[in-house]
Image (tube, rainbow, N blue to C red; front, side, top):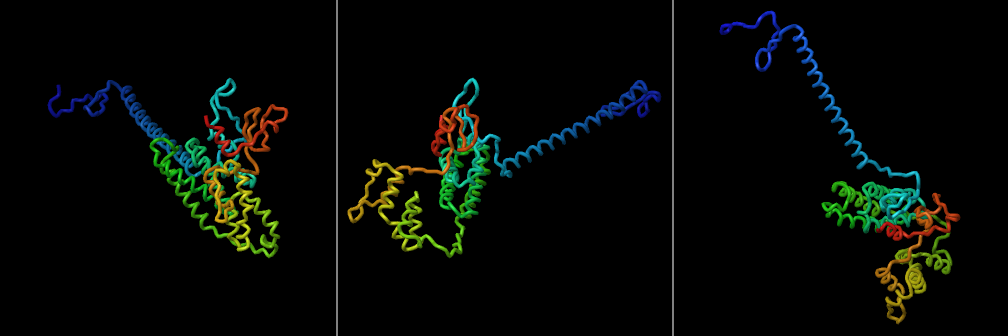
Length: 355
């Protein structure tokens, strides 16, 4: 046994210093094994470090891709088919049911707003969804809704037409969101609260842009509306289906103000939108003892919905239950597919997905 301070390690043996002291190995082969083990452990540490770094990179890349998809992209989700099969229950051929959000994604509303015959139809549909059906849409459908709305606003800013119609749509949507955002904790909206606050700020920005529109009078020296005979002017005014348009037209010139107060004009407008029974319930007499059709009209529109008329609408095939725009080909097995199609108003479209 060695004395205190004496090096007691034998020269013919291999020793390795560890945290617990000196460890003896019996031969050179064991010493080589220790060296290989040490290098292997270092290599494993490097591999783990590279793997951890790679995992962090993949997670960061996926997060950036998701953020780009959720926040920066303005691309609508397009589908090859511009029609959708409306089914309300499971069958042997199909499982599940069709939702409002799915139909909103599949039907080509983004292109429909560029068609003057479909523009008012799409705007009315957006208004109905904004009033009561926004929470029925999926996250993708809500994103498409906002993208289409932005395209509508940009079109109005460029064309300077239908300004009042879009102002009313934005106001309706903003009021609905003010109510829904306060209930985010109850899962009434899909997405982050900050995302919806950002969308509300965008709506306010669009409203400001519409308010700042300055409509310039075209430099046209030909025949104007007031140059036409009175009978033609009245004939044109009778084709206006909104009483507010008549009021606005009467503010253009004094002579148009007289025409816009014509009793026969407002009578035909009331009879166009409302039934005789509805009119009889809202009779209003003027100071001269005559029916005041103008006051009756504005009283009636507060009590009953106006008649809606559109140049083009969505159609539902009663034979195959496929929903599409008019003129869109769909796989129908009927002998005469056109006879099986029925036109749907925007409200009919909403009612189609109420289960």
